[in-house]
Image (cartoon, rainbow, N blue to C red):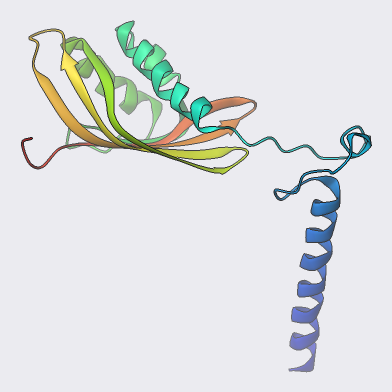
Length: 173
């Protein structure tokens, strides 16, 4: 039992040392207090995205819809993304399945508009955008209101959708 206690105590001490190191280097949400600290050769700079940057990701997705090219839309998703689409009962969990969904969905010539939005930045490389949106289907002019959740991760400097859930509103407005 004593060895387990030492291991736990050692892990707590190591975690504390890591937290102090991250704070000193500007990580874990800390901000360097002087310009000199910003230029230190080994300092880690963590830049949080703002809500507007995350909101722009939907605009980019909507522009990809307008191309009517399912490959361009799928390019905005991570290779292991999961899509729970509005107009399909099938979960899409790889690129081929996501492309297949958009091949059919884009036949409707959809354009989305946000009705209500709640952005939550989780860190420098992740964020969630949730709310409600409306699709106007250019094919026949009909409208589909839905709830949505986009989970984004920044991978190699590029924001990608890792999880997208969209479901038609259960009640007519």
